[in-house]
Amino acid sequence: MVDALEEARRILVDGGVLVDARPDSRVSARVRARSATGRVIGTIGSQRPTKSDDTHSDHAVADVLRRGLFTSRRRGRLWHAIPFEDAGELQDYLDDHLRFSHRVRWRVPRAARAGRLFVERAVRFEVLERR
Image 1 (tube, rainbow, N blue to C red):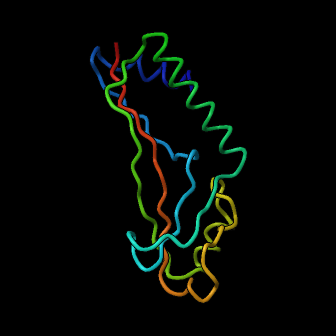
Image 2: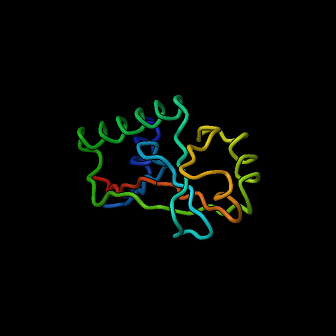
């Protein structure tokens, strides 16, 4: 990823901005009932290789900042929701997912999982300015 950041810097004008945004495996995704703001009824972690990849990405961003190639203007975390008709559809999604664990850690009994579900996923971002 350092190579990609160096290449992005090369094509940006001085003061140009790059937004680094990627899924955040530091926190578990939340499974919410009925709406994107509903009660949290479960969590989904990230697969181990994904956490390793994310750690390498974190180090790459830190490296280009330390070397003075970019200045960080803003960083944070935002959340977005992915809707599912029911727990079966969510499980089908997880079975093929490369980032998420394939199992939900449910906080409620099976009967309370009926109906529409939303997976609320964290995204880390950093606004980098070329120096």
